[in-house]
Image (cartoon, rainbow, N blue to C red; front, side):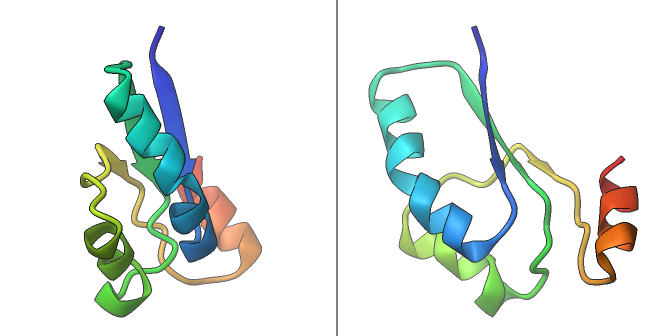
Length: 75
């Protein structure tokens, strides 16, 4: 079984960090997918660094736009 962790916003990165660490501690097969909604370092990457999280395996690089535009980019 492979576990996927999908991250969109800064609060989700923070909330999911203990879950990600537990997946690592238990040696479970997982990957992270990040939507890339926040595309600046200060709004995104800094949280991965400060929380000592690995770089997501996938990044959709959605960026900014209307809700519809972001949804379309994720499709």
